Length: 452
Image (tube, rainbow, N blue to C red; front, side):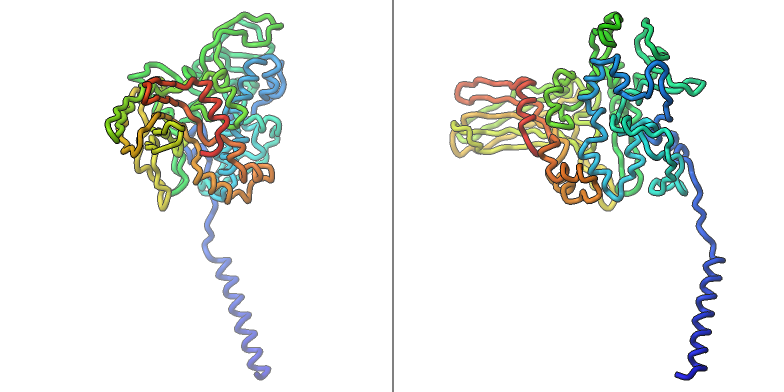
């Protein structure tokens, strides 16, 4: 190739790159406009955390541990609660490691006070939840972060001067901190998160509609609130005895739910915390004729003012009828599931919902063809939070988790209860004697189980 040809090539390449550069400079650019989170999510209470709360006069930092210096009994109850373990929840931590997870948004319910957040998000680029504009929070408190859903999430707010004060439900004492008796502001706090319902895109859907279910049940359950069941009334002193305050009507703060705690060691706290099954199950009816056993089960959502189960759309109630021989060997079993069925791909949509509505009675009938004489029929109901198939998915997809959580997720069945047995009945088909398992017995069985 001659020098002239080489120069022509160099000039051509140079002109090409120059033209591309000019085109890049002149090409219309997409402007990323900050859009407020309030505007994108229409001021939904779960879209942003409670604003930063300065130290509370007479107390100090608005941490649960500081509240616990005086409210000792309430603090000990709270420490056993799902709320106190909402951030360390292994399943939640696994969800946070997903590349598709909108971490900043999920944390608004699991660490709901701005003091708990290292970064705050007030704006989204072009209103896109995947493009949060994070700002360093100068008031970040790592100790308070570890408290997850802490006392201040419900009980501390800012007054007109920007000072922290405590929202109380019961007055007539002289606490060392500013307090306003505003029970109406506490009554529906649960629904800030337990009624979070939104669709971010085709697959990311949050479907916590417990508040809507509660509202729909008003005709059958009157004026019940979340606290009516999950914060049972109790007569006691609100603070430690040496402070000399009177006994008053208050509420338990263990926030017991469906009987599946966040850790195995918390099973023993379920009944003291106020756990009760919302389902009323009638004794199983059966008829054994020749080589066939027919059964009939009737049960009612008698106590819960929301659907059973509620909350996480992947929870379900599993019913099981088993027949055993004289040695206790399983001959056959039948199962039925009550819950939601979702199709997640290509677009998330609810395709079936067989949950038990407040006040609703369901019947389950079936039969077994028994090759040999059965000795016992067993009826069980399980509240299932995590299926084995989902757990296996979590075990394989935890690369982004911290080393601590990675180890726990890899052996999640040893650390995290997947389900609890909430009802068990046995009938001896020879003597017709029945055994109904007590709540304490069910708790013991559940605490010894591993996996689904």
